Amino acid sequence: MLTKRSALTLLAGALALAGTALPALAQAPEKLKVVATFSILGDIVKNVGGDRIEVKTLVGPNGDAHVYSPTPADAKSLTEAKVVFTNGLKFEGWIARLIRSSGTKAPVVEAAGGVKALDGDDDHGQGHDHAHDHGALDPHAWQNVANARIYALNVRDALIRADEAGKAAYEANAAAYVAQLDALDADIKALVSRIPADKRRIITSHDAFRYFEAAYGIDFVSPQGVSTESEASAKDVATIIRQIKKDRISAIFVENISDPRLMERVAKETGARIGEPVFSDALSDASGPAGTYIDLMRHNIKAFSTALSS
Image 1 (cartoon, rainbow, N blue to C red):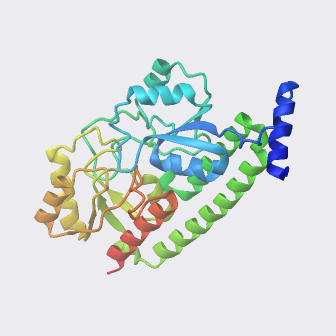
Image 2 (cartoon, rainbow, N blue to C red):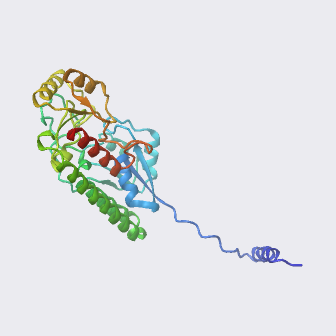
Image 3 (tube, helix red, strand yellow):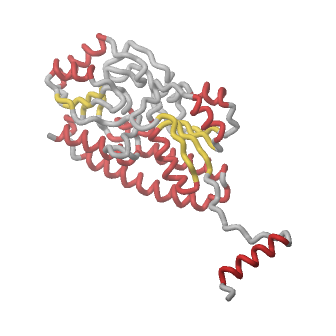
């Protein structure tokens, strides 16, 4: 008896002999390969790109992009990429060399393009004697959520240019993500408004929060400049200690990319307490409190507001 299955087998064999193949099963479209230089940017790119893209992030969770040393695998990733996303504002001092050595033909998109950049001179707060490699601009623009919105729209436009067929998906993803960012921005402002104005001063280990300060009204002071490549001088530390005592600053925060020993010394000499770790330049791993950019900002403002309101 000829079964349905055996009939199909015979038909396939006959068609093969006749030089005609059965139609192949439709394959899922190949994902657009893109590179993001560091974890925060990588998360923004993933939110906008969604299922249509494959993101390779060079500096991963808890990694310090200031002092990163690219690997041969990074050069290979750039060679294979259709778009390379950087922060810009001289945040990644190593990226130009990596692009040249990789020979990539992919367009390089600065996510911070169009952001109103803040001054990055080391005279913020108490004054620093050491230098850094960022030039005149502070690169940590994502610390203002309104700037992260600009990042998302820049990513959307770049992905559309690289993959016109995905235009509707990228636009929808970006709109949904921007709505989440707008809600986050409003929540941060609401939390800051409940902190007494005379208590809105914080010591951080790395001067990465100027955009947060300008946007939300908390004053940040740091013994280290905007790049973790520079070391805080003894004069810087002494000035910070005097300032903590003079202004009765009670909260000290150490970032996930910083060596905590300096701030532990400052805390010991002033009696100020060190709050829970905060995140400036990198996400935590997925199991931590800052596995996404939105989680990072929510974690930080909760830590700040808890310390300053107590």
